[in-house]
Length: 161
Image 1 (cartoon, rainbow, N blue to C red):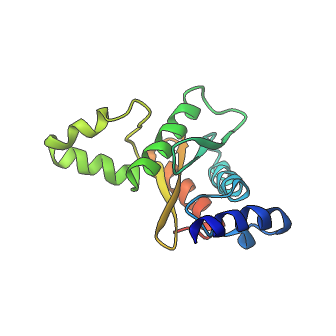
Image 2 (image 1 turned 60 degrees about the vertical axis):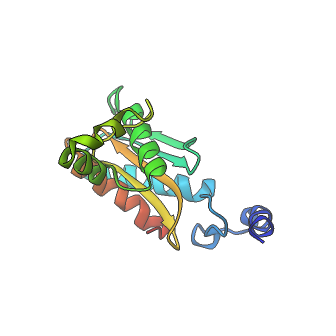
């Protein structure tokens, strides 16, 4: 059943013109929606003159979209990718994960689970109907809270949880 819905969505998605019309019917995030989420997150940070990078990774951790502001620092792309990867892999926001690790030293090993993980605020899981489909990460603002707020703007733009 899911397989049929997945293939039907692949066939129908190009014919749909609005981002809202391409809500995923299978546990993945369409490229059009990933791009819009990244674009809106980048714009949210740009409003306050924060030059950031925004990454969206699929549920499998592979990068779908990476946008980098013209004056973003050289470290921001890898930071955004790592935060997005961590949010998708762990299914939770990276700030909450950092607090979870800090509150219980026995959980510190989570930091070493995968070299791609960045456990700092600014990464959020992307869900539709409670299904984890991707992760978004923002890197380069003066604080992780600002990165997270920009990522949240990206989620809001595509109607994700």
